[in-house]
Image (cartoon, rainbow, N blue to C red; front, side, top):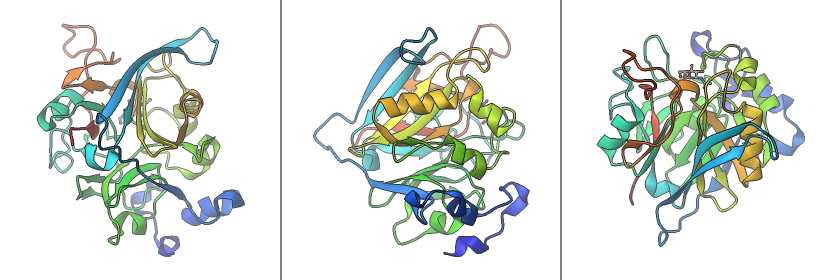
Length: 303
Ligand code: NDG
């Protein structure tokens, strides 16, 4: 398809196209650079189930992490990618705490999602929010999560053509960094060769993967339920590296998953109230730790 011909704008992309991903991936995946699954649709059940956990990072290990896992029964009708502070937030390079964005939208559960430029505050990557195309990444290649109009869940790498597709368009779309699990297998080594190194600001892509930190991720299980994942941490001191996040999710039956913005951005909100332990210090330092003003969020709302 045409993505082979599209140059990467602004020098942000890798020096290769989707052709590279296809050439370097095993025949197992053929020509596809992303995975698509029908989403579940259990309209009789509660919208979502949220669990808190304290678990050893490695089974039997001594390092423990605190986190939240949210299982969403009907992602098409109850999950939205929301701009910081509401519609238009990305256009204004706005940043808002997850509480602020979630309260305004009436989210039952919410966590931070897309990366942003820590200098200018710009939202990075693709953003489609409730059917509104907010911005596209201009072909910059990072792991994506999207929901199409018919409810199909999409994880992986998308060409500009895929992003702009009008036959079954994305109604929600957000970009992460590192495709953690593809078809139930850890896909981090492949992500290392394929993804843009400039979207995240925690060292090189390899450092970003290997460092322990607070993290957020999104994935799906075998039934097509959406799985939101958030763990607390502090970069270089507590939390999980991305290998551990991938193993953890795999162990709990997640099939495809991507990593979203983490570190001081990692935040979990229930009914508009902070329910996680963020790592950023408050400015001014009148209190110990504060929610960071972040970019886009993933919001689980009533049907
Ligand atoms: C977090 C990220 C950093 C990113 C910034 C803004 C981690 C470990 O938020 O990479 O540049 O999006 O995910 N850190 O600090």
